[in-house]
Image 1: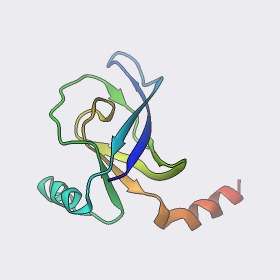
Image 2 (image 1 turned 30 degrees about the horizontal axis):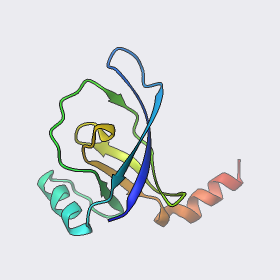
Image 3 (image 1 turned 180 degrees about the vertical axis):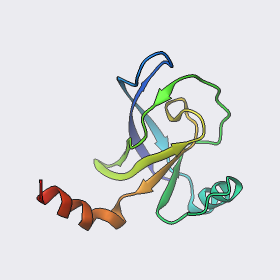
Length: 111
């Protein structure tokens, strides 16, 4: 398990997310992540990284997807969806970015 830093814009349900928060979380082992994805009947498990714990957190907090998961100063994943609230410790599912690095660099160089 890796310790990662996750930055999230969030707010109460009344307004759009505009407060930057961060939390330290741990990645879950790949087999545990795969099991969680199968339970949710997700069709893809390729390039998905699971972070946090399967907690049941009822909250009206809004979070913005596409939040980065950072390990040792490098972005490893982008938040795709959560089951609950990632800043309260619930599990989050991140798309790993390393398979897309070349494409990202090409796009960045054109702008």
